[in-house]
Every structure is written in C-alpha cells, then in structure tokens.
Image (cartoon, rainbow, N blue to C red):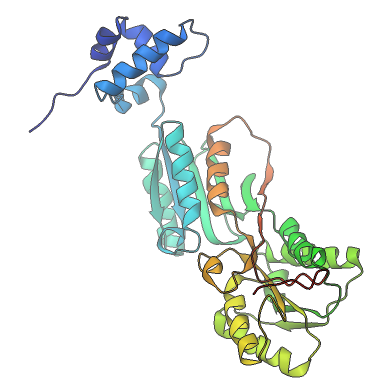
Length: 347
C-alpha cells in the first residue's frame, strides 16, 4: 500500500500556521520571531504526520544539492579507517546533507572517474580521503569547488584534516613516564622509509618526533630500537623475540602500532613475561581488538570518526584558512602498563 506523502501545507494546517511560517521554523531560519510553544507545535505536527522535506525542491531554491562527495582509495572497504566515513556521514546528516561514497581502489584512472562521477551529481563539495595518511596529488576539480583532504596532504589543496601525531607520540611517552618508567624502554617498528618519504606516510615522522622529543625532555634514552618496514603481528612477534633474547633489561615497549603489539604480547608470553606486570607496552591506533587483549592494551587512538566529522565541518563551514587541521589523538590507558611507583600492575 502506498501512503500519501505529507506536505508542508499539511504540517502548517495541523499547527495552525501558514506554510511560510512552518517552513521557517522547520528550516531553522534565523531572525524569525516565533515563541517556543509555536516552534514545538510545528515540530510535533511534523513528527506526528511523518513529514519529510522535499530535498529536491529545497536544492532548486538554494542552488545546492545537499550532497557531499566522499572519494577515497580503499577507506570504504577496510575496517581500519571506516570511522572516517562514519564520522563524515553523521556530521553531514546533522545538517541535512547526504554523503555519496565512491572508491577508486587506489587506481589513478578510477580516481579521476570517481571525482568526475560526484561532480556530475552537482555535489556541494568533495572530501578526498586516504586510508594511510600520506602526501598525494590532489584531484583536479573546477575552480570554486570546495575540497577538503582527509588523512592526506597535498601541495595543490589548501585544507587537510590529519591526526595530531606529534602530540600522540608525546602522549605515549607520558603514559610510561607517569608510571615511573625511566630506563629499559625499547621501540618496536621504527620505519625509516616512511619517516623520510611523505608519499609513504605524512605522519609517521611526526609521531617519531613526538616520541623522541618527549623522551629528551624526560632525559630518557631508548635502551634499544627495532626497525621494520611492515607493521603486522608477525613482525611484532619476531622483533620482540629478538629484542628479549638480546637484552634482559627491557622494562617497557613502545610499539608503533597495535598490530605490532599483538605479536609482542605473544613473544613476551613465550619468554615468561606477563604484560602489565613484568613488562609494559604502549602502542598506537586503538584497534578494536586492543580492549579485548588480556591485559587490555594501552594505546594512543587514531581519531578517525572525529576526523571525518571535522572534514565535513570544514567543507560546509566558514573556515577557509589554508593549512592542516589537526585532530587530537586520545590516550587510552588500560592495563598493559606496570606502575613502577607503586609496583602495581595487571593481576
């Protein structure tokens, strides 16, 4: 059965107002003098009648499509950075927009097609996102098109949303230092190539800068460092196993991401060390598995959802200053750090 669509006139009639007045209230038009009771009456009428605004008509009136293009490489098909889309969709919905997601799979030719596809639909702007934070060549768009880069930087585009990796690196050291760790700290997974080449990573060098500068401020020297081009659990296991075989004085590990930490947990267990009691581990990302480890992993979170929201606010808002817009990385303190001051840790 097909129900008759409720119109603005129906809502206005139910609320005892003119369609113009009802429209002003429902659209949140500023500088309109309606009492709170009147506003409430209109909204309740709209809710009772299941009123949905005619987006097409509004778009014609305002010359805006109320649609945002979200073009990415592989963000939509990987669980690691899906929060970027979730945050963008949430923020867009809150201001009456929908998000059209198109993915290129990392193929430059398909990327151009994806950008053209969203432009053909007269989007109000484009968020261009990458799964790995890196330097890219920005998409070519007509002059006047609003573009915000998300988890990426480019010489061609002025506004980019990134995690505040330098502050995140400092926070990781803070978690250990606040628990009394001053020596026996090792780094797992340093990636020199990613630090040197922004096309591989735009942020890892900043993370390392945060780590090293904060260590220097505390007067702490790393006891050891293990490098790796890959950051998978097998790499964390191998590097930590090597490290523990070479030195019996390691009291804490800074792992460059959570997946390295997963392997480090196993290597510690095989060595007879209990994480959070005999050795501390802090990491980066806040992978969904991190809280399920035993002990649960202390980590510096990548704020993907908040970044997605920030990209939409930049795209649709009045902030036009060029530059990087950094989103804080929350420190998630769980059970993997032994407090040397009280000798209390995970039980």
